Image 1: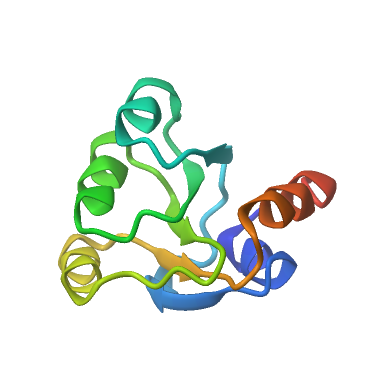
Image 2 (image 1 turned 120 degrees about the vertical axis):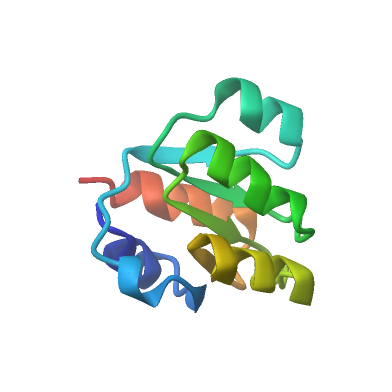
Length: 110
C-alpha cells in the first residue's frame, strides 16, 4: 500500500510530505508509547498515534518510518510540523478513532 492509498482509506489530511505520497509502506505500527515504538516498529511502517509533540518526529527519523498518522482528531503541534518539514517527515491526520483507522488499514491491506 502506498501512502496515497493509505490517505484515501483512512480519510486523512496531509500535513507535510505531499511529495512522498507514492512511497510504499511496509506495514503499520500502533502505539502511543515512544519506547514501545522504538523497540518494535520497523523501517518503512506508518505509525498510528495520538502523541503530537515534536519527539514523535525524532522517533520516526530514528526508525526511518514512512509516516506518522495522528488519529482520533489529534493535531500535531506547530513545533512538530516545523520539525517534520525540516526533516522531510510525512505527517497525516485523521478524525477516525485509532481502532477504526487500524481496522480499515488491515482490511484494505494489499
